[in-house]
Image (spheres, rainbow, N blue to C red):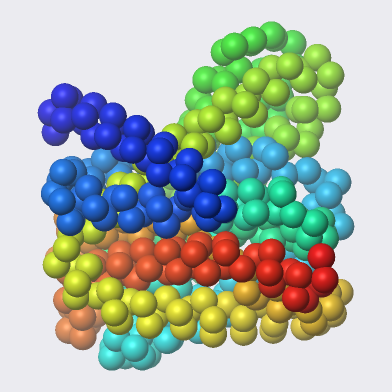
Amino acid sequence: MDVPILIGYMALLFVFGSFLAKIAKKLGIPDIPVLLTFGLFVGPFLGIVSTIDAQTIFSFIGSAGLIVLLLMGAFEMRWIVLKRVLSTVLRLDTVGLIIYLVISGLLFNIIFGIPNLSPVGYLFGAVTSATDPATLIPIFANSDIDPNIAVTLEAESVFNDPLGIVATSLILTSLGFVSTANPIIEFFTLAIGGLGLGYLGGKIYEYIVRNRNFGEYISPLTMGIAFLIWYVGEEVIPSLTGYGFSGYMAVAIMGLYIGNVVTKNPAKTEELDNLAEFGNHLSVFIRVLIFVFLGASISLTVLKEYALIGSVCALAALFIARPIGVLISTAYPNVNTLKERVYFALEAPRGVVPAAMGAMIYSNIMANPSIIPSTITAYMPAEAIAGSILVTTFVTIFFSVIIEGSWAYRLANKLFNV
């Protein structure tokens, strides 16, 4: 791709994306569906942004953007507040996530007419299992909703991001894109290894900054260590051991450690305030790029072929799989009222992580369709797997943000009289 073309894309997306996001804010709606729609118009509809170029750019923007967003999302999560709702968060992010993944995957397979045990549907379930803190936090920041309810959903969304990525990585092994000798060991090394690596990254960061004043360079230092931790988990350790540590999980844990331990040092308050401000601004750039390029990366042919059936899958995932997962996972011990559990079930917008994972999976499959075993492609060709996952993920994000973002206040008012 030529550099002038890339710079032209950036100019177009940032200028028009900013105007559209500002309009969305004035109208009181989330910016995600607006940015997705803008991507569709400049991509498949008008052809201003090449679909191939969008997919190429996304292969970098998706991974790098996730690292920054996970780091800053966890950095802003306070442990003292999290402890109050930790029991519910853990159940939502483990039992609830697994139930959602299984039910949404089964529904996907049934709707698309492929075998019930095909990993294709469960890959969709894993990709869309993560909710979006970047959508939830602004919703709750300007509302009178019980802080415990808000923190529960925000914390769930921060920590189910890396868990959703771990689940996606695990299911990709059955499609031939990730090799592992033992999937069970792979799961524990990804999750627990990511936890340990993130804690180590936080300790190293604390040691480096404790006696040094980095001033304006604290932001590049922090981002550099986060990228390094991700690289060690995703590339270095697998090359040495054959098993990977989740770099995304590690980055989230590192962010949590920095935000709750390093920030207690009064000498570092100004530096870490600068880091938070920089991270928030950078996150805005990343959100614009991710969602516009996601929309632009979908070809018109693929969109037409899977939009209708993908919409059915998306609505089934949002309003069948998610409620069942939440209601079962929070049933015992029953520390939340039924109204709170209903609110948790119906307020879970998807966002950055599903967007990035869906587009990256599409790109990988389209680049290497022959890797997928013939036992899977016998029922669904590789191109169909890629297209169906991408489009269904797209409409899941779109519907969840439009519907759940718009009714957040009204639903809370109905249930809690806020």
